[in-house]
Image (cartoon, rainbow, N blue to C red; front, side, top):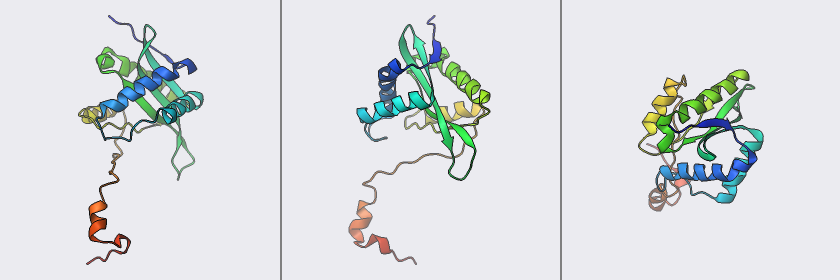
Length: 170
């Protein structure tokens, strides 16, 4: 059986984290999310490594999963939360316990800080409902969802109404 080690990420893991997160991005299918800008992506990863709590699932030196928590504050509240910045496990290792081990370590960290977790995991693939069910089984409450609207969606309306900002109702 393959041994999966969960450990804190190191700065030298940044390029492998980028590889994993690009892989995660690709699973959502074309057009679901904006294209990856590698420079912006590596800046996000290195900032999260420096300021957040990043875990990796390691199999003999190869990263097969990752999870990151960052500080988050709702604009209307003084209370801080942990925000689940990213969570990804390669398909081959999802049933091998990597997901559960990452979640256990994540929850232990948040519990030590007495901090609730906001999990904003987005998924545009066929497993979106499995992700929701799994989080609910781990004690998370569903707050709604994220939607994305293509920037081309409103072009027909504007063509039919040149002054779209002054709509008349009724």
